Image (cartoon, rainbow, N blue to C red; front, top):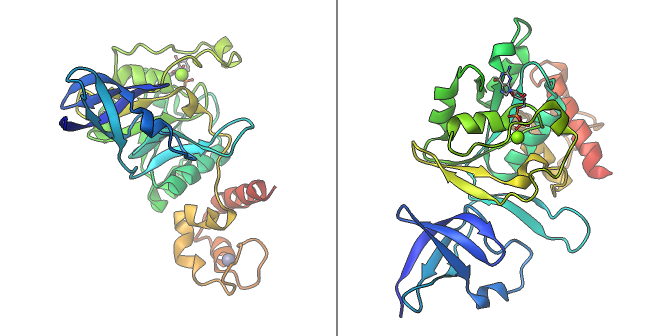
Length: 302
Ligand SMILES: Nc1nc2c(ncn2[C@@H]2O[C@H](COP(=O)(O)OP(=O)(O)O)[C@@H](O)[C@H]2O)c(=O)[nH]1
Ligand SMILES: [Mg+2]
Ligand SMILES: [Zn+2]
């Protein structure tokens, strides 16, 4: 019996994966028997913990993919079989990135990313880039999110402001950046990992999709420990499978009220004696957040 070793998948292409074992990276193929088992999810993706062996003493073979503790996934885009498309396995935290200046902060989209993170059991962190463009103004939205429990990091890829806090938050974890085009994700990642040298979009690039589509999903090792996921598909999370009755659980500030609604399966939209609606009217739940809930509910219903 060949010895098996445990490793972390840091790069995945069809049939082959790069596995990090004790700081070294080896290329391994997936054992045929693994590939033949029926499944509704991806067999092996970045972030997976795998068991690897060397049956002939030379080449490496993945013989087992260990159960995922968490995942960051979506429904497979396009038509075809209903299948889970796992972007990153065992993702610890999602850096939901927006910015001051342009593009303007879209609270509905922010809430959508937060809901996805909650649904997937991944810790969200809100990153506000372009702090150098921040003008004095109403930052009460930020207090709202912090009071719900979401950390907000204010940074600038341009001046370096807040980068220490950001790299500190990345340490020892598997993380990924998401957010709309133009907020500065690539600029931030380039600051964190200068060797990577990602393309920084110019204005005209924002219309040309497909530019990064040939990029392969990778986990990059961070100098201070931890990994940063870089996946071509992660910027767009249009499709997602979330049961409508779970949606209210993805709004943490609803928790203490949800149980007090008169109806057990209260949708918090029209029912009498709804404790969530009462909390909105009393100012205990932010009205904009509630509005996001209603919109996402409509969308999930449609
Ligand atoms: N003023 C300012 N501009 C920034 C900052 N970070 C990125 N940008 C600019 O924002 C634009 C989009 O950046 P990019 O990293 O390509 O965004 P991405 O689409 O989210 O990857 C580029 O023109 C960057 O130079 C920042 O901290 N301050
Ligand atoms: Mg980019
Ligand atoms: Zn209710």
